[in-house]
Image (cartoon, rainbow over all chains, first blue to last red; front, side, top):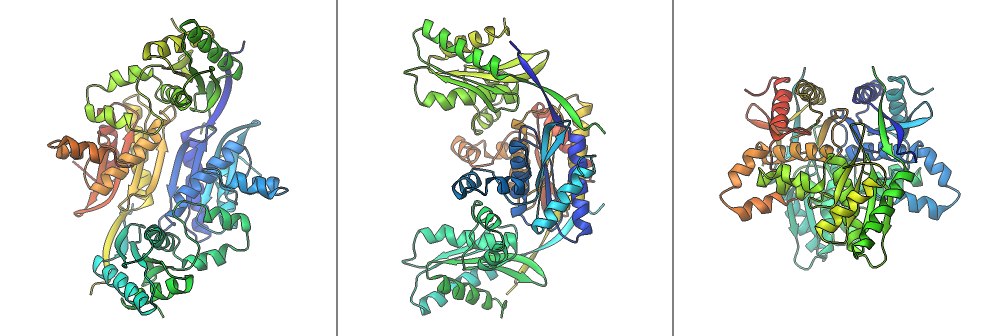
Length: 142
Length: 142
Length: 142
Length: 142
């Protein structure tokens, strides 16, 4: 019997760097956002709210990071993958803390999901760009 | 480092005047409504329930005011702005305390969102008119 | 910058063996229980409800396993550790999903919390004995 | 009529600095903690979870910061102030998101509550010391 399985989670150091980079990318686009990073268990590691960002964005950013981490997929990619069935799409969309629009990305490293990042506050495109910038700052992504 | 950022919130005096004016506008239209005003942090400052208004309207009025304040947009205008993406619209609509039908307006002053007003109890049109009347009574709006 | 930190979680194989052993120990004591195992992130890995066990025990067993994992301590030991302050004890006891009576144990391996086990359905003593039996079946504990 | 009242909230810059300093103080004490800062409206501005901190501490740190901000008092000082009536103490303690044990401090500046900081993960004394260290890093406190 194998008692344990090795898991790899994003560190606080990397998470803090990613949310700071996401906020910087938002400033460059003249929007105010919230950025959040969760570990592979979906639990918050770092969160930063830019001055002037919508209060509503706090929970949305966290939920985008959570959704991306626990499904191991970008939030909008997940919506695409479910689109063949409206019942399925609606059913997943209505689960607690699930967000299916753009701005949430899994944090992948060596084939494993080590966390998720979520950005909220700008347009869907703004949020996507800032989340991607967050990942790039820690050496992940295209 | 900048320690603080200045924020401007609606006073109790103005909030009380706005909800009273909203109820008066409702009486003139022969409907009974609840009117609520929140500050820029989304927290209740004044609430008034006209005699005979639906109990369900208490929370709806509050949530309309909250939605308008935390997104800085009229509740129905927010729905319009999200309509290009059904997933996005459904996703925001299902967030706790978010209301996307008419009757919620942000309270803007000198470019800042200082609060939100929400009215519930009449038709969507009634609620919109009463919320607008509430704002006019404190010198805001068209 | 360190991107990841290694974490070790209990496998499904070990979790299934532990809950089965807990149910067997319960049968030997002529009680019906629910046994649950969560990983180090507090998420369910295995759950087994013996025939005749209280429905209420499903959530209690899960919450005991969760509490033991996320605090890294036996549920009743945690209560003991907090007993010096009634405000602290009451405050932790009222948190969502926290259980402070006996029957929850952390699953420790090589100094790390790899999960938690919780048993509910018998007396506190029954639940403790069954949780311990679950751990022994996977080579953990005294 | 006075339409607005000026409010002063902690910036993201200061909040980020405070949570980083709280984590540094925790490392010096060889404990792993979560630190959170909210603005004067009780809404999260920054959160950081040190590697190895309890998952349960995420919500507790946030709730301590929230409690300190919305009551304008240290979490343990609030408990002291309510101790003359057990019914009052229990009643406040059971409100959602209220935490009455040590580790939450209001962030005061020029007589106003501009936010709150909460630390969770160590002993009550550890948490208090780290929260105080967070405030000192932004020039606040004794």
